[in-house]
Each structure stands twice: as C-alpha cells, then as structure tokens.
Length: 243
Image 1 (cartoon, rainbow, N blue to C red):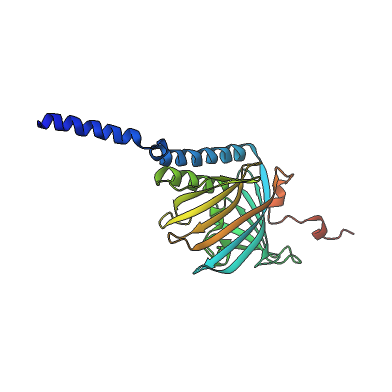
Image 2: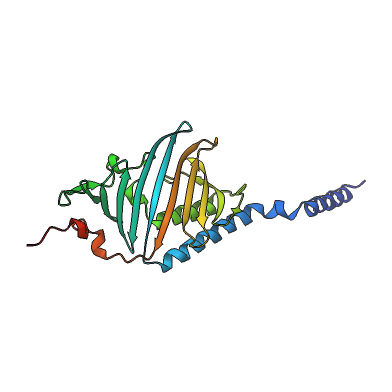
C-alpha cells in the first residue's frame, strides 16, 4: 500500500473517531465556563440596579477539616462605597464603619459608649477573618471580579450545576480569593429570586473544607440614610436625653 493511500485512510479514520465522540465531550469545558459567566452576568445586573442592601452573614472556618471558629454579623452596604458591620460573634456589640478604598476604618467597640471610637488599619489582624480576609475584600465588585477572572482563566470542568427551589449552584476551579495564588475549589450557591450569593464553600485541592460563608435575610434597597454609615451615628435609643 502506498504511503499516500495510507495517509488518506488514517485521515478518514481520524475524522470518523472525532465524529463518533459525543457532543458533550467537545463542548463541556466551554459550556461550563459560559454558564458560570452567565450567572456572573446576572449577579452583576442585579447589583447594578440596587442602591443598598443588608443581610446576615455567618462564616464557618475549618482547620484540618474540623470546625474551629464561627463569625456572625449584620452587613449593610450603601452605594458606591459605604459599609457598616455589626458583630454578634465573636465581638458582640462591636460596630465597624468602612469606606471602600480607604486604608483605615473606624471601630465602635462599646454599644453603651457610642462616643468611644478607634481608627484602625484595614490590615489589623483582629479584624481579619480567620482565613485572612480583610474589610477591603468585602465589596460585591471584588467577588464578581474573582468569579469572572477565574472562570475565564482556569479550566472549568466538573462544575456540576444544580438547581433547587431556592438556589442554583456550581463548582468553580479558582485561585484562592485572598491572594490569587493557591489552587482551590469552590462550591457557590446563588439565590434565584434575587441573583445574589447565598453560600460559598471553599475547599483545598484534596477536598478538605476551609470555610463556609452563609448569606441570609437579604433586604434589597432598604431605606438607609448615609448618616447610618457614619461613625457618629446614634440610633434613637442611643441618643442622649434632651432637657
């Protein structure tokens, strides 16, 4: 058999083998990426339309697969850049006021003494999460940039999209959200009715849990005055008595 005829036969066999592959095997990586980016787009659209939001957040942290710490706080945000965080665990009664992009924040540690205020660096170890997350990494834009960057730059396979009555969820291959260095896996849950985060589960590459973050009781566009995000703000029950 001539070499040219052999090449033609091999070429035909190659085409046949490719044609016999199920479509799923060709498109899976791209389709997973596209679906993740589509969800990111819906979150971005939702965020673009709101002016403020509030929710309850619980952070659960693990060491060697065993839970060792929980954080609970109420989170308030007012566009474009104001945050107010009211801790109930582990710093019960502490309120933090932060403007996105600033290097410092203000802490009001004593509910009974609202005039006692401390200005601290965003790098202060006491106000980083057990995983090392800073106040400057709490903005929704930070999460969206993390989600879109990793969906585009890393192979996305085995995403395992699932939908139930409340959420859509998927796996994301990503570099850690703290410094974008260590490869990790994230299970991300998004509320379908409001298209905002419901839950993050963070794992190392061996499948050990590192942290879970739960978002509950969203209030979209609550009536929040800008003064509410100022460290000098006093709630009515804390205002001094007038003669």
